[in-house]
Amino acid sequence: MAKVASLDDLQELIKTAEQKISLSSNLKELNDYKLEYITGKKSLLNRLTQGLKNLTESEKKSYGQEINAAKETLNSAIKGAEERIHRNYDEEGEWFDVSLPVPKAPIGHMAPDTQVIRQMNAFFTYHGYSVAEGPEIETDEYNFEKTNLPKDHPARDLQDTIYIESPEVLLRTHTSSVETRILSSHKPPLRFVVPGVSFRNEIINQSNHAIFYQYQGVLVDKDVSLANLKATLNEFAKFLYGDKVKTRFRTKYYPEVEPGAGMDILCRFCSGTGCRICKDRGWIEILGSGIIHRNLLAKSGIDWKVWSGFAFGMGLDRIIMTKFGITDIRDLHSGNLVFTQ
Ligand SMILES: [Zn+2]
Image 1 (cartoon, rainbow, N blue to C red):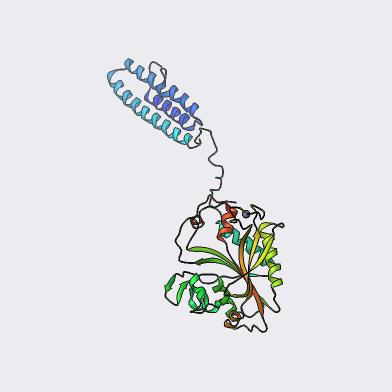
Image 2 (image 1 turned 45 degrees about the horizontal axis):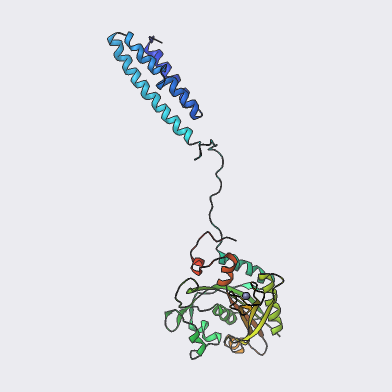
């Protein structure tokens, strides 16, 4: 095309080129159009520019302006097409369909403590227990007095309590406060478990925290004996650690119960011969339990001559950490998504 016939023809040519560029579906096609219309030696723009020399001065002026405008139009069409095509490519340059549904974004999972608590709740609700909860800010009455820990009781010294308003309002030091609340407000027979956090004034480091998880269980009925307690806890140990678990009960002192018993499981790491994990004892204590003290029942308004019951409680932190391979207790409160089962 040494000479362009008319401005109308020129505009028509540019319009067609612009349309083709806009409809190009991949980068190769777009590149070909770029060569054909703009940058190639024999491109449309080049040929039009060369054709200028055969024109009169006045024709040159109007054609020149038209060609400049065409150049702009085509370049912006290329740019638009490039952006559109790039949107259809992933980071590796592979084409993909932008209209496909987007895969669901990861939104996290239940915290390890919630998972363990729900598993335990499943076991106990199957055996007829309800799941109870209570306030974390508690009064001295429910946290200490009613759990058989009067103000002058030496066992109070074992717990370094965090007070909100000393001496009456505090952060509960154990979930037994929920036990005394429920025993004070409900009539037996009763069966319930209480999962939840408790608080003590501890220096926070890798293995100690001021916030710790507890799991408490209570049963009040007629003629409840130690045999019922042992049977329940042995079943629970099997649920937690498998059918081959070996347990033993040792006499222990807890103010809320009489008699009190600690339940140990045979160390799974050394099978009883002694190792670092069990501190050479061969056994690992996992919970404390006992027959509910008659004083506790009496203080909650339950006639201990008619009703009896057992209670057990355990710290959950070590169980959760072992299960999930968590080595730093602070991670239990960090929301770190790394810890999955
Ligand atoms: Zn061991």
